[in-house]
Image 1 (cartoon, rainbow over the protein chains, first blue to last red):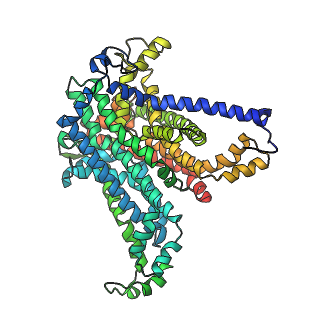
Image 2: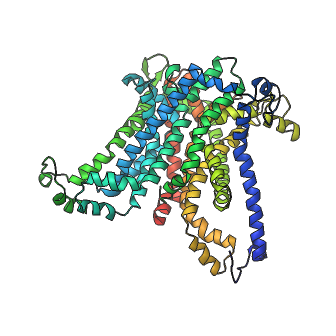
Image 3: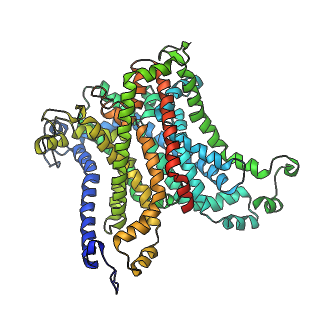
Length: 290
Length: 317
């Protein structure tokens, strides 16, 4: 940052002084973010590796060798917990696939094809944000019961897909608008059909938007409690969040150390996603209009 | 532009006389692409809302399929029950408090994450994880650290700052339950703001700042004249989304306090849920849902009238 003529600083500080103040602020801020952001995750991890007898009786900061254990993770192999986690994974994957396919198609249509009421359609989609999961879930319970989707993973996947849909469609629409139409036209000149142009030219270029939409859908499905609580009343098809809450209500004995071991297992996939996908994710969200 | 040239280049498998039909081929294709969205939307948004409205006009016991016509009686009851107005007020406090805090924290985190040079990727991943992990886990960890038996935050609050008594559970305290809900929610959801603003910050070309520096602008001026205007559009959208999401929030409140102690953290979604499953009044609960939706719709329209985020966004595209 060499500059022959340093500009005037804030509050009459010299350029160097200003640099030092911002550097200091940045350092303090980073420290706070590290502590506040990483701390709960650290705490969860250390409790997961600590013998639960110790967790119940005192505050531990680090699992020293005498209280360190892997035993807490045996809870993951219990049939109940295994079912909950398996169901969550199935629902998350189902939601991601549905959302990406449908939003890619609709995004392409909105960006490249002219049809009446296009803009109004997109606006009405946004009203979908105003529906609380509770507002939708309570009537949906009856509707799903009547058409036989109550208590099925498919029913939950449909509900969650529809909730992430408006956002994903807008994201995809705006992202495809940033891809020059000339790329497809070139493919058409070479004899490709519109479908092939879409598949081979547009879709590969949409990777950041696809990943952003997929991550949004993943966060929604992985997070969901409300819909699963209402729409999956039986234990054998339920997902992790309501399942664990019910298990805690029924079982008098579900030690915190076990809960933390389960939590750690459920936190690792998001952490890995966030680490490896972040540049795509941020690129996908760079579209300026939502 | 595609339809004129496309026809001659692409051989169609089946012959459809598009020129003789009253609709254009492109219109059919366009409507076809949004058809799945429309179906899902009808199924999950329009149908439930219509159903809720219809149900709200009946007296329905949750476990009994008998529907008794009630007209507007449920709505009169909703507006007369004291818990409704209390819940609406608490919901507004929760919504405004959470949104403001999340906006401040989220913006700050984005600005810092954009500037740090070492460990940026790792720290960004850790921050993003907060938004991606299941809410139930945030709740479990929060319940653990605020538990009077060995909870580290409970202990710090009681012994270091004297905020509450040593044996007291802050999540079960009338004074602290709502504040902690806002704080815990902020830990998780501020990241939503961070993701969007960070993406916008990354999109600002460095040459803007270099040009400003040449012109003698200081850091505050650069922030005010370059960064802030670029963020404004997205901030308006994010504030709208976060307010709506927080007003509708059910999961984290139910998991942490179930609306208690007493009604201290009962917001409208919690009240609706309780009305269905505790009071077994399905019709009344649907009336609450409809009122909630109308309230949000009215607020959103006012927000659009005042700030017009879509126009703001469109001009910056």
